Image (tube, rainbow over all chains, first blue to last red; front, side, top):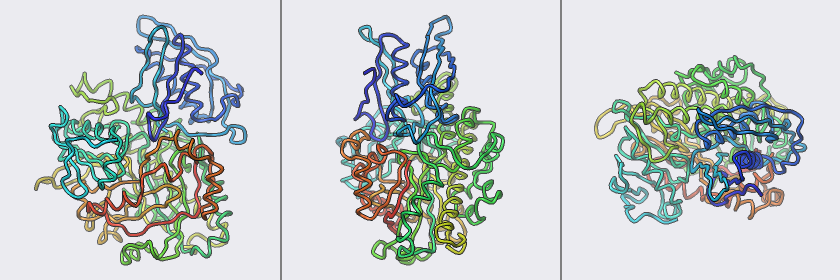
Length: 143
Length: 485
């Protein structure tokens, strides 16, 4: 599994560690981990609508922060549950550029078994690191 | 969990860590609680409250209430008053992501004997009328422009549009509308996240509960009577905040403060979540104005929910809400920063009091209280778990020592994951029903996570507050029915 929940790290909230061989994969894993906090079964989210996401940041970790915040945004603003389908991250002079396509649908209480609403990504112990060729992200979500 | 060696007991319920405990502390840290509560506090509480003690302008003590537990920046239950004339800062971590998460207590003229035969129907209809759960949207259809008006006018907007009674405003903290809110200080994203969410509960530990007053749970007959509470009476209590709107405001300004804090203001913090700016700075002022917008949105949110409660009761019991006596007792905020005048060491000071997971608890005679409560003190509503019930207390003169702040709830002791392993949602619902509590939930796993065993003992928390002299128990409420996100 590309992500696991760190059960004792946050009493009132949810912490997870996502991994991937490159930035794109760890970012997708973190997105799935975030969505899985809200919905029991990610497979129940059908790709009925799409949103294009473009983000820029000097730092890779804050780029991840921005991407996760984007999913939380769509959950509230449009009641959309989204999964990242395609993603490309390039590094340039000003920092990082992320282009992604996310697909999903409006939350349907009849089909999507709900878990907890995510309020925000916190910066508590927030980190993205590459160790021995593997990217690891640690994220704590406020629910 | 272990108490730091340097922790010194100063009174029966007040414990202190001196400034020598951590480099950079400007004031001591003071933690309130019985020995049991303090012994069980997670290590992060001591770390976080002493980090707060390093913030510019922090006055007298960095405080933690008896229900204290790990938070972001400040511990939950954290209170700190910043002197704005001495470079005091404003910090989103001292308010929380869910700005004005708070509690509203509403009494009815119905007895438990009248309600019990229709309890299931009542709870089922409340569950339909007050949306809860992930990204839930409310019945109030607003344009983004109208939403910005609500951000500036709060519950006043709702009452003017016919969603409440004038007396509701008098019985809400800040009269349901905090002056100085500025819709232009909030981002488009915040508006996008929140404009559809007025009248919704959210999820996690948010809830709406139907409760009863039992004779043996009235601690002060005189005060109970003054609040209009009698044995056998059914009340409604709900706990929710500013939803996606407030969460985004907090996120936006945390990011802004991280960018300007060091470079522009030379402030270094021990924890990124304590990012702050001087209150008297453009960024600090902007956040304060935006935060007030979120305070107002949350008051409006709870006002709309009250409106729906009145509608449901009226439909179920076949009488108008006025005839059913559905009146507010009070509405308190427990994630805020307020500019207040306090006497410190014999001197009057203007302080920005951050209360995160802590309730304001003004004592008798304090000017800001509604006329009817001026002699008796401010109602303080403290929520327990869905299995144990909640409390109404009253602010006291002794609250002076905590800048008139009190705990807000019982605080978690068990992680959500552990709670999910120990309890199973559907089984828990059946158990509770067998014990006379009917609960409806949008999330089975969420229900398991909210099991009573995952929380501190509310009786102990409230007793600690009373022993410390910062609030006095009036009534305890027992749950009958509950709706959760």
